[in-house]
Length: 68
Image (tube, rainbow, N blue to C red; front, side):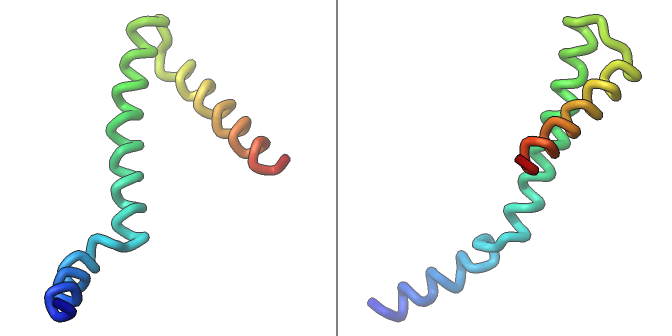
């Protein structure tokens, strides 16, 4: 029984990594960002420069939230 548990742990080890989580979260953010951007453009009538401004203030707000 112990041998099979050890083999299972070794088999799953490459996927149990902070790097896999990092790559997966970046991929999710990249794909959802383009959908979010297109939705704002069509529903709100924003152009790319307006989205850039919104993004800057969003990042600024997130940074200030971390500081407090």
